[in-house]
Length: 421
Image (tube, rainbow, N blue to C red; front, side):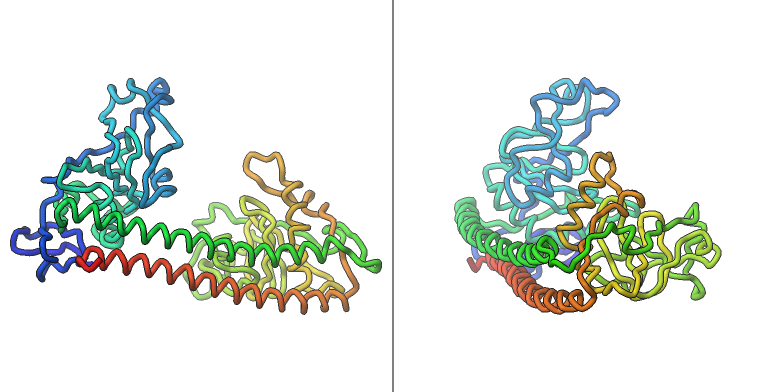
């Protein structure tokens, strides 16, 4: 995409050309560049004052970014919050007609929905009421295709936003209305087929994950005669992390800093933690909890109960437990045991009832763990490693299929707006 694209001779410097048709070359036969404002009426969103509860809860559906994310690229028929006519009358909010195209311009930039009925939006949206020359779904498809470009033209520091001068400078390259409708019908047909294929692949992906979890649960639910049941607190030492406060005073980029392990370091991590994004000073480390290579760490809040094995040294805050194992426990076996539905369901039960779910050290120690002899632990690890490898291969294959379907969608869109569909 070409940021600040200078489109054909009828466009001015600074205008933004929204279409994959190359603005410097000929448009498809019968297509022409036109200012979006001239074929669609722009309307802004607004939020009635939260200090007036009487404005909220009514017959008018009110769209936020979260609502748009759920329905991106499609028709929106429901919202989490509603406002009433009093809220409309006492704010800059407006009720938009059915088929208005709503584009999120801040926070979550580039999400696009079409109203399935009359609704209002917050100020994070710019809304287009299409005239007779513009098919709403055709405009929505332009926004979907131009998602990357829309993010490019947003700017700001803490929160990026597409500002109204840029919005007002939007130009689109469109064919006659009948051709727009034909293209929309063809794209809808193609994308419905692709979405069905994605749903089938998604089911296969979930089935692969569930097969592994089912096998894991079966192993620990059908215990052998020589297995023993022990509480987690009897099996290993459980210690909670701690954090020097305020933490910002102890963060450092110095080479002599020590690893500071955060929940964010587990993103896309299944089992092993090899590195951390942040470090703290040695003075901060004195007020924290040390973990060594080979130690287990376990989340105790929010996404609580997820185990990881350390492959590096570092320090943990109070959102973690460290579990130190005796020699008679195979660490790989212990990871499978803690990651199994058998144990996770116990953590879920122990953490039940809290407003923000978390699990205390006293509670986590109460989880009952089935422990086989050390030789059988190794056999279980070998079996689960093989199944894990097979599952990962399946997941990788299915993910490649999903990625290929996404690329196919982009390719079809590109052809449509090059006049090749």
